[in-house]
Amino acid sequence: MFKIFFLCDLTIFFLLIATTLIGKDYDMNRRSAGSDEDKSLANRIYGEFRKQQMDPWTDIHYVQLQMPDSERPNQVLFGSDVFKPTGYLAYSATGKVQGKLVYGNYGRQEDLDVLQKKNVELKGSVMLLRTGKISFAEQVCVYLFICLRLHLIVLLKQPNMRKSRLIFCFCVPLQVHLGSGDPYTPGFPSFNHTQFPPTQSSGLPKIPAQTITANMASTLLQNIGGPESDESFKGGLSSLTYRLGGIENVTVEVNNVLVNKEIHNVFGVIKGFTDPDRYVVLGAQRDAWGKGYAKATVGTSVLLELARAVKEMVEKDGFRPKRSLVFASWSAGEYGSVGATEWLEGYMSSIDRSVITYISLDGVVMGRGSFMASASPLLYSLLENTMKEVQSPLGSGTMYDMMGKLNWQNNALRPMSMDDPSYPFLAFSGIPAVSFHFISPNAYTYYGTNLDSMDHLNYQTNHHTSEMTAVAAQFAGQMALRLIHDRLLNLDVSRYSSVVTSAVGRVNGRISQLKQVVNSIWLMGARGSFQRAADALNLAITNTDLNDKEACRILNDRMLRVEHTLLSPYVSPVETPFRHLLLGRGSHTLASITETTDMEQLHTQLALATSTLHGCANAMMGEIWDID
Image (cartoon, rainbow, N blue to C red; front, side, top):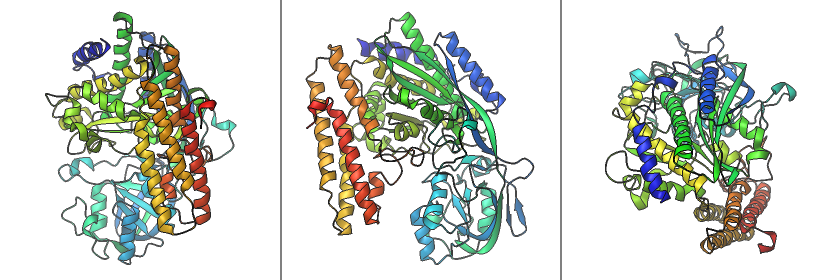
């Protein structure tokens, strides 16, 4: 009966609101973090939650955001050309530097290798890069920590051939902090920054970085000189002969300044009737550099409509969720999930074992025709089941049919990147998290630019934005309702087994290549313990009477321990915030161990990783007397 209730009542409700779901109520010309417009919108959202009697509250933080200096604009000098881009890269190092201009493609290690093979001198150079493949912060990190010889990176927005004149007439701000949250309060909340001694994140770049437009980049590339590039380095400027440079000098001046801002996160809650202290969080970024229609307006609208829909189901349709559903509107998302991360840092002791899942609503509609998602492996089965329940926005069949049924994982799943708004929940806090996006075959190139508007998104969706938003709302709603209603949580630990096996296999392969006296038998044993614990948990689920509330609660607690216990207890969240053994960043991860050449460090990290994996297996087993 409940499945019919989901598919009929909820689907009809979403279809009825499709035409009004993303009205102009939350569409604003500007909404930068901490601005009057941002706070005004926060107050309106608070009012909506209060109107729905959702016991709203506000979480206030005082953060440091980097912005351009209005009196000293950033500039790039190349020959007689002087460029003064309006955009910037938040949290860049500041200063004025000069060096030989070098074109480095996407800024990956393999791109650096190509330059070295071509004998392009990198010492003291200024690197021109195009976007894509890796994040801006990772582009800066690659050259700072691997090359260690560059003064500067200039980042180029990769042009779209058909729309480049429109897209790149503006230059937009982005951020290059290799982390999330306020980088000047790493690992702890910015409730009152004056109470903490001066400190900063280890992920802050030490070199200046500046973004430029495609027109500016075209001028630079026309006169860069040097050897001709490989085919893989050629971008969308078809009239150019791409060369690698290393001949002509360029000067770049970055004068960004830190500004203290007060930001407000806003929350509302629909409390559960059985286990109100366990909850699912639905969240959406509220701020944007410009209009941010796809990035912020759509997600905010979905958040509020879902709150209204579920509240109506409780009050009028007799729906009694077992667990609570929290709705969160975040500020300063454009600076690297600052609002969300500060909340996690501030309340970790209260939420780390209580939040069942985080569902991000950021960028849920960026086109029409396909679908992609990033998630904890614990949520793969929930994603699959939801795809089977939600109708395809393209016509007949379900989303599961649309994405190739049994091949849906290869077609839809993507690794969760560090700039994903769900990433801090997963890799920093050990909370199962998911992001999803409806997309077109051609990427929505306005996303994250000043041209991310209603008209451009309508064009991208072939004027089906309202319908696509309704499907996105239904998809998020179905996942959330399953998690707060079903007696047994929709967290599938068996999906992690293959991930663990693959990661441990790569470590073992690396050790074999080194031909050193390194014994990986203990790590292999930990992998076996994880597999046996997952099998034992699944067997217990199969043999449990789901009408036994206490038995289900015990099983749910065992499932909830998995993600959190994959956070390494051996690294500091201040120095290494993304502590997840499999999906984090740092020397503690299994991926990092496969790249280690220092034998002493390899032995140490191998031992600590083994201990972390054993700890996760033990937590899955449940009571101490059940651990073998």
